[in-house]
Length: 336
Image 1 (tube, rainbow, N blue to C red):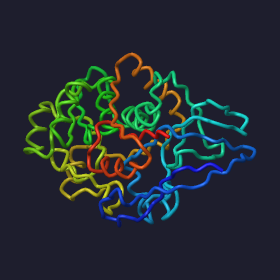
Image 2 (spheres, helix red, strand yellow):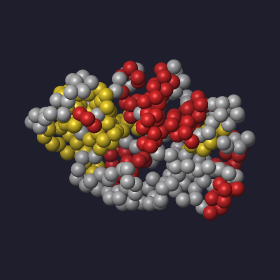
Image 3 (cartoon, helix red, strand yellow):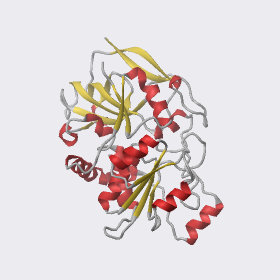
Image 4 (cartoon, rainbow, N blue to C red):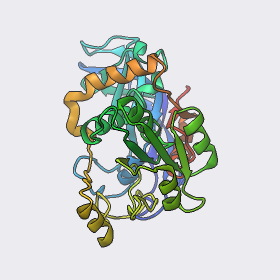
């Protein structure tokens, strides 16, 4: 038997409550020595914390495609690790693998079939990028913009991105430029984030929504109007696009409801507002990952991430991410 650490759900924050680190708890368990046919033993290298996980803390997630975490049971999410032992034909010791349902545990025995082998060359050895820019957030940004953005190269379009310094937003702005937008404006919550968006990530301008009047600033920064709005946070889109408030901790229908006067603006100005679910586009994942990897290697896609070390800090990382403490993707490096 081997002793390993894992994180379990200790308590639920309540539907409209703010999650805290104490909602999670670390415990020690025994890992069996024997592997059965089809199983692998993996060592966890990186784990992801993401806003969508907030609804998994509720007894009812509000969607049929996301299952809730259970009290006193191990928490799971996006993860990357290395195979230490294999009884599964398609994976060998030393292979790097990823899964959307990776237990928050230092070492774990899994069914080989739920794992996807990844090639470190795609990310120049930065394995955590498979959980961010060269993974789900990257695909969400790329496929979302390609499928729903209606961008035409050379037609002088302006894109606005909310949650612009987060995992998806920080990529969406750059992809907007790469796909042909002539102007990209980000909205985020600190001056530091604003300056990174402009100086490092190629945004043309950034607005700190906690300072000044967002509507006035949008009006000033988007002189020829707004053509594409990549929304990462929800909230009421007021006359000028946004009244910028995250909806993750509020129990509201999805997509978040609009005020009646905003609904009428959509109708009279012929604005399409579409919910985007990246899991409906699995046939585009492979080519999307290749495109993202190529842009990254060519230096066209800059990747920011915020890394915290130690499985014991999963709760801290989650709380920080939910309160905007991260720039780019929030990652936890598991070092044991």
